[in-house]
Length: 307
Image (cartoon, rainbow, N blue to C red; front, side):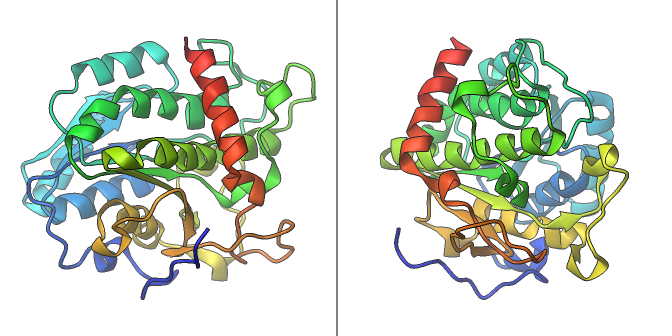
């Protein structure tokens, strides 16, 4: 990989700051999990810049209220909600089949974290893997032609520093042999999201589709409902506005033009690390999460799982 990309922004930058002056008029965006947390702020920033934004949400009534609130707050009428249960293959298929026209920005933001007990989704896969990764893989694949039609599209996968707790265990993706561990399952799903961005970019860059992944930082949202709340030390926490900054930067900033297959945090590309940092807040991405062979293997395996 080339030298690491560095922007003028940092961990304190907000979504509004990184998109200031960006014109997204005529662009269309989808943000999954945009009913709460950084998904709402991501949608807000894209809408303020002029994009038509679809909030892809599991609870449609709540999502419609968020869309109404955002329309009032931003003055943009091009914000609407559409039902999407990212963990349900039928719901994903219905969403992609209904989509018409080009799609310029896809932010795969929805997720769950550290389910205390082993749960399996509708297709029998471990629930965190199914929700955080498989559903977004199917969604992105289903929207590929819409992304290609945009003549310059961006796919943004919201991963996590949690990926440092587990690679993808190809021989036991669904914890059918190894004991279930909430953090390992979460870590595997987040590694998978990075690998998906790596391989999507390799396969689709020629069609004008670039893909990247990111760690948003430690933000107090309902994502931590199974962990008893955010445990991160106060000095390392971010506001929602700061947490959405890297997603928005990768989705819309001209400074990110031409970048793909990379992992970012604090609005900058992360260095590779040889082991998990002992100190919280030290940036880093595991080599296994960016490995091209792992990325291709996972893509092929996932395509088989979805057949």
